[in-house]
Image 1 (cartoon, rainbow, N blue to C red):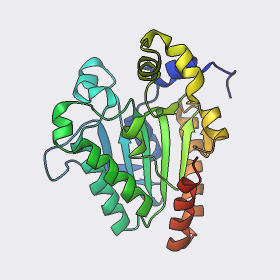
Image 2 (image 1 turned 30 degrees about the horizontal axis):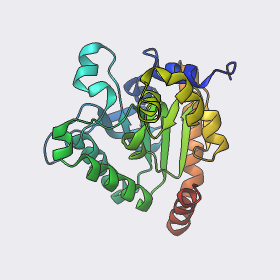
Image 3 (image 1 turned 90 degrees about the vertical axis):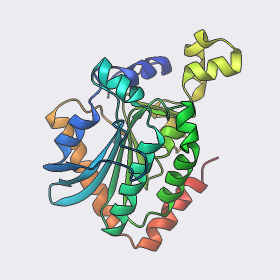
Length: 258
């Protein structure tokens, strides 16, 4: 682990443009990956990168919310803020994974769901609620990983797994520190003070039982290999449980939150 950072430094690290991209991470984890597109209703949200792949000999469904690697991609993906189309795509793939008994891995890097008017008209809040509900009921192993930012309901939609892990330089919170400062103090410049009291760092989240493990930052092939082994070990552990036990344990995990 690196030396201890302040909460706001963690926020900055989580948002840093040199953070490993979801696509690069998926490419490193899988020896073959087929991206699947579309929500069968409105369109295909490029902020949600998802499909079927093999991690060694284990078939998996991977669903990631990604930011762009340049300004053009960021504009297209709303800087990692998914629209209802993207969440419908995620729900479709979750249901498909459950049908074929594939473990699900979600990789999350989003400041929150896209807040546009059209997104609300197309059912943004409803789709987030449906993903949370479905996540609690999935009869297959489900691993959620916060890669960078885990913001608001947009992140929670894909973070109701049997376990939730966070990268070392990540955050997970009900809203951004800027939003918190604006609402509480009517002053967005108090972002550092907000970060200090929000308990959004991995260390605080682990202490509070919101996440289950802190993952050392993944930067290179060796890191990816270590991360892959963690995932395979967890899939093996969860797959050895009966469906009833899996669901009971998942439900108990979230019922224990205070």
